[in-house]
Amino acid sequence: MIQADTLTQFWHWLSSNSTSIAALFAATFMALGIVAALEAILKSRTAQGAVAWAIVLLGLPWVFVPLYWVFGRRKFRGYALAKNSDHGEIDQIAAQLSGQFAAFSTACGDDRRFIALEKLATLPFSSGNEAQLLINGDQAFAEILSRIAAAKHYVLLEFYIIRDDGIGGELAELLLAKVRAGVAVYCIYDEIGSLQLPGNYLRKLRNGGVDIRPFNSTKGFGNRLQLNFRNHRKIVVCDGDYCLIGGMNIGDEYRHLHPVLSPWRDTGLALSGPAVQAVQLAFAEDWLWATESLPELNWQVNAASTAEPKMNALILATGPADNTESCALYFLNMINHATTRLWIVSPYFVPDAPVIQALQLAAMRGVDVRIMLPAKPDKIMIQLSSYTAIRETLARGVQFYYYQDGFLHEKVMLVDDDISVVGTANLDNRSFRLNFEICVISHDRDFAKKMEAMLITDLQHCVQLLPREVAKWSLRRRLLSRCAYLFAPLQ
View 1: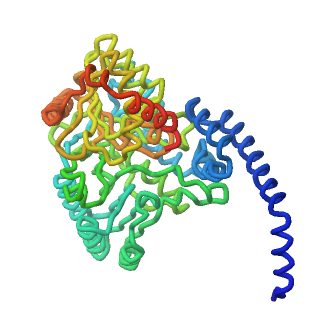
View 2: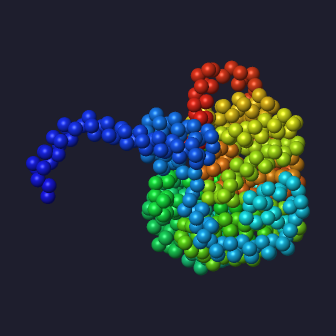
């Protein structure tokens, strides 16, 4: 036990040397700030991010050096290393699926719009798929629950957010019933997105036989401090021949029960056919990272069971473990190859300079560029950041529409008359570089017509932002927007 006089002596020493200790503390953090700023300049994902980090690290090092250790990581190194060295099983499965996909080859590979996309994806386009748009939570959750109820062998679920509320309770009871019926259930949730998920909910599922795991983004010594990389995917797979992807998590807000933002506008996609195997492969890779094991799954590629399944579809899974910034490149590819129409819906619009320039060029070459955003935001800082990008692109002919009927959360895209996208990626830095995302890119004119009809209905609930309104924005608003946009890579 430390003697009282020893503590007294230490306190007197501390008091008499407080000025020197404070100076040493300040000098240490200034040195750490300089080192961190230099690293940020060398390794930040964007020049904008490098500038933002350098300013705060040099200006307030005792505040931002710890934050840089948590949020300043450029790559999800643990996942990337595992992907390159420990995923032999995943590589073997991917090779096996590629061979099977040959039976469902399409002409998409010869279309210049898709060459780069196929190189970004693990598996190529496939034909023989069938898809259904799911509009809003009621329709999507009814589809999810009915498909899970019909599953015979296994169910895979992966969500950014799972809540212990009405729909969360319904899902839990159904999953427990499926396990009792002999169906295997595997579930991944993101620890940050599902931070409020109570332990009782997890224990109930685990005790009932549901294998539910956190994504485990902090696994490994080198990842202990990182909180910035999130698994933003929303996936349901049943028996390897059906899947659902979209913007909806498991929460009652998606059933229009949010106290402030309701009604909640969102879109999902139900898919059957060969492309389901590519979705399942993305889940398997995440499961292998989270658990260091692989479940027994059906890897047989089959066409959809409808009479004439014909949709060409590509599954693009992106994330911070990729060798390239796949999500940002995907957006650039879609924008640069649009010839007549580019309609994008996203709750967040904070693109970087290359995407802003691509949107400007698309509008200048005569493409009908429309971007639909929520009038009522859920994140004020992101909406404030968006004003800068809006001013720069609106002046070149990009059209903006603010959705008025509740909160707009869907992440979809319509390019020309034949390309449709439904997924989880937003038009912002977090999706470009920090989140694990997934989307379905379809090449099918009939499905594009359905997407067009859905978006025309959405546009009827919008008010267009006119250039004369932006011209009236105050200097204060523009300055705040510029400052917020400067720090967008940190968000």
